[in-house]
Length: 192
Image (cartoon, rainbow, N blue to C red; front, side, top):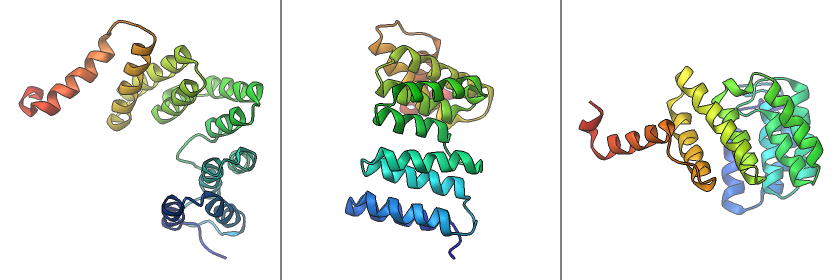
């Protein structure tokens, strides 16, 4: 038995990125998630990372299985497994199932979690639902401002801006926040 660790999975991911063999990484991660004892990383996160490798290997069927195991485990994960599961279901053409999952996510407290808002907004963008993506990106910005997640705030502001441009919407106060950050980086004295 091997203890699960982020370092071990990081090394597998780096090797997969270097070689392009994501299937091999996915198989190894899937086996480790089932056989290993909990270590510094929980089984749910191990299943999530295995599922991500299956997606990179263009095998959403296996990814669905891993994301479902992550949900069943109910342990902590960096990303919401329901959003990843919805992405895999969209890839399989299971649109109704994916949309039902996203409704469940919406009805939970997910809109208070900036990272989840970002993931849902990106997924909806991929699916061509720009208005839905904008709604989630805005919820994510609101969640960042209510909390203290400044890194995710910048990502969400940029995504939100791109969506608003694509939708032909005029600049608003959140867009101006992004402009202010650009100005502060260009002239550090401007932020004082």
